[in-house]
Length: 420
Image 1 (cartoon, rainbow, N blue to C red):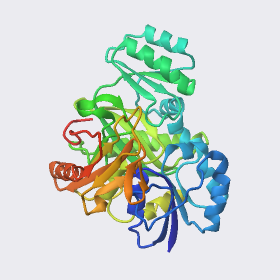
Image 2: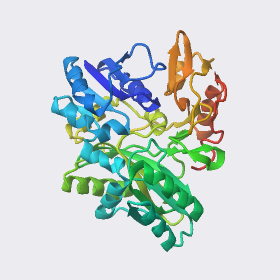
Image 3: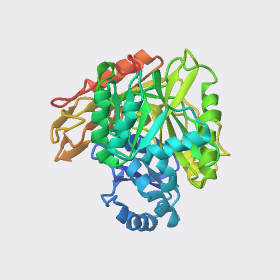
Image 4: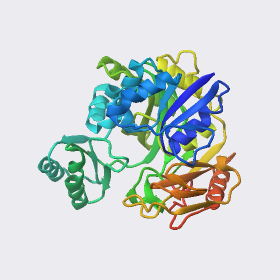
């Protein structure tokens, strides 16, 4: 029987724990730090997740005989938590710091795509505001401009700009986050997220997900960490997953191994696809499960998640299927966010949940005060619906979200109905 440690506190970590706890081989599940909406039978550690405390944490995990650590968020990965845990002999699911640059540095990812021959938008890397303004002035930008902070920015380091003035403002603001920017042409098409378990040389693709990043219906309002997701994505052409395996995932894994940054973990490709022309481009890579994509995807996954995580951690997927098996059901996940999100979420608002089935929800920004659940972050929780048709899953998700009340709750009403 296994002891598992899940690092992270959001809805993604809640669904990872929920799925892993179903394994007959898991006897003890620990979350660090977790949140107070997660099941009370899960152990919670409150240790610091600062980079300087990784060694102390690894020593604790070793003492507590942790058999596998699963790292949810991007920051600990970029800071090298996997490197430290592995140095203490703890099998860990997630890439080492050198490989996590594929998410932590947009410039690193763009250069990697160029070397691996992966289709992506035309781009420029700049290190000053003046350089950025010069690039903006040199090009025509017929469909708009995307300005990205080079480093991690909690899902808020990307600005999609329709006008030159908006792009100039984005350059001015984002250069202060990371000191380096990627400026690229805006692409048109459908956005799709596709993830794969990777062991350094091979991969097994999961099914596609569509997430909804903008705050408001019809993709209006500011970018967020994600307001909902659906899986699978309707109308994907037959054979497209094999195209991605052979033209995106495997070339990137080969290039990363070649340059000494071998990738083991979940590799997430954010895609823009034009199915009428058959063209696609990679917008970005992430080095972990998406949030809220994981909440829509993992409930559809057939069988046990634990063997996949263990195989990735030891660097050998050869004993598992070439593609991850999934149920035919559709899933829809809808996020309920605090008022003021994403800029200034209001904390401490009481939450009432009328649903008697807590498995309908995955929690994120919540805390308890006595017996009362309060908001403690921007994305508070999300409701899951599943069904044989997308519309049935959608109805169930919104029905469940309707049983949650807190003052000023924000949510999109078009998840699963409007393209992302």
